[in-house]
Image (cartoon, rainbow, N blue to C red):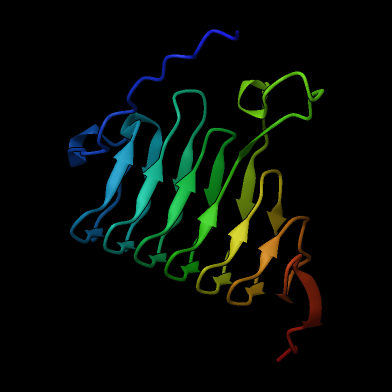
Length: 177
């Protein structure tokens, strides 16, 4: 019989502003925002973070949020592999951005025991991420991208693309002008 793993708490995510690695001016945290490992979280100027957002910093990497960014309620950011949002990004409610996954293992190894792979996510400037979208580890989202509601982004997105679906696909490029 396999020995049972003992889990440990990650804490409740309550934080003090002075614990953040960087806190810009004019930042709003709505009620219920939680930040883990605030010493690895860098927040720019004029940032809004909505109710019940969970920003999971990680001791090995940074979570960076650029200036003039709006983050909706109930988002989940996991920055174990590193996460950077450029300036002027809009993140819809309940968006999830993940930066790690379990490696494939033989059936004899429980997936929960598989080693983790960490892969950074980078979101370019002027991006809009629709309600409930999911961005998976290792993805780079280009400048000026619009991600549709509920999209699951599994691969890099070129500048100015509009992506939709599961898995997300380029629907069109935004017009010039």
